Image (cartoon, rainbow, N blue to C red; front, side, top):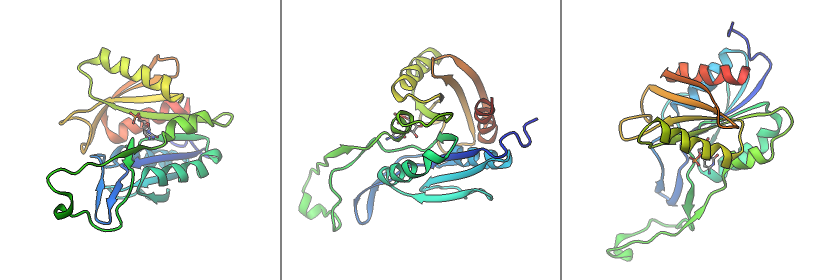
Amino acid sequence: ARSHDLAGRTVLVTAGGTREPLDPVRFLGNRSSGRQGVAIAARAAARGADVTLVAANLEVGVPDGVHVVEVSTAAQMAETCAEIAPRREVIIMAAAVADYRPDRVSDSKIKKEQSGDELTIAFTKNPDILRDLSAARVDGQIIVGFAAETAADDDELLELGRAKIARKGCDYLAVNRVGWHEGFQRDENSVVILAADGDVVRRHEGDKMSVADAILDVVAG
Ligand code: C5P
């Protein structure tokens, strides 16, 4: 039934983790490999969609048959998404975006000889791409966000997820539990998909390809 259920649909997927430069050789990053977003792009393309993948520093290869736009920082991702999103029916934001970036990027390598025993870095808030795209949603668009939370149990996970979807204003939120041993860098994933009203529309556990299909099933309706 799934085989070509997304035929003709235009899909934007973000994947990977942004890197915020400190100087020409250093950055602040995160542990996102890009596997889940890449799996979503691959499955959406396999199901017939016209897929654009906005890729930030992927540790995995990009799938065949998708358009790829490479970015590195949150600001670049924001700019690229703002340009592409209005012409996409489905937007799935799987990237781990840095909430803050260093105020200034040093032109030359930061030297310990100059900084001494303590180095202080000031940060500026990055745009919340998901929230901004949701606020600018065009008619009929479906916007899916992700939440990776370190929750003690399922109740806390749902509570955090419900607060987040309300804040972001997206249509669905795929919530998964992360920790030192869950979520990142792994092939298995477990998600709860929430609707805008906070209802659980789907739970799924499995490899990242099957999680991708579960999310796309919700989008396909
Ligand atoms: O607020 P938090 O980072 O937990 O939200 C995660 C969701 O928001 C993900 O879908 C992520 O891609 C998106 N996000 C974003 N821009 C940010 C931070 C997060 O689009 N600056």
